[in-house]
Length: 174
Image (cartoon, rainbow, N blue to C red):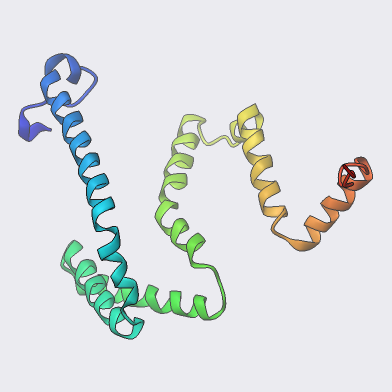
């Protein structure tokens, strides 16, 4: 923004509203272009799925190596990419799902930064993370989602729920 002579901050709308409107217009046109190209290029790009994996994967590997090298121009990044690729291969062979792993790698930085921010705001005290109502709901939801993925825990919860609410699972005849 400084390159364009705009001082970022809360007064940006007051000092240079034309720049803000230009940014909004650019985002609108980019969204419009993505929609148009998405509709028009979907069928041609589906032909990529017809390419055999044995021919497609070397191209993907080369592009990944070029991309990891281009970020900082270090060969070390290419070795890190290869290492994580091998780790991903081993995990896939062991039948681990890849989607949670990729999401954890991509989104893992956000909770870390926000935990640090929260600890700084509370002077290192963990009690605000457990005593607020919204935090309690989030903790309970997290615990329930973890427990429901474990088969013995899920069966125990179902038995306890049926003991409390025995008529909840009955099918009524119409």
